[in-house]
Length: 53
Image 1 (cartoon, rainbow, N blue to C red):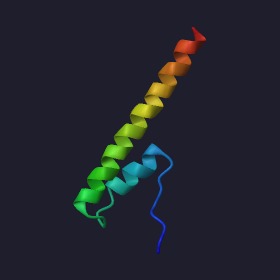
Image 2: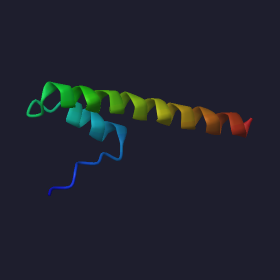
Image 3: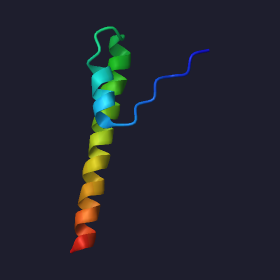
């Protein structure tokens, strides 16, 4: 059995979401994961900035 693809960065999720070879429903899941990862990065950045004040 093949291991599933695991994306570590938001841009990797975005690349999968834009891959025309994948089924539409799978691409939609990757797009949602990309957005969630970007929001997590933004949250981390804001949290670090708030700690510096």
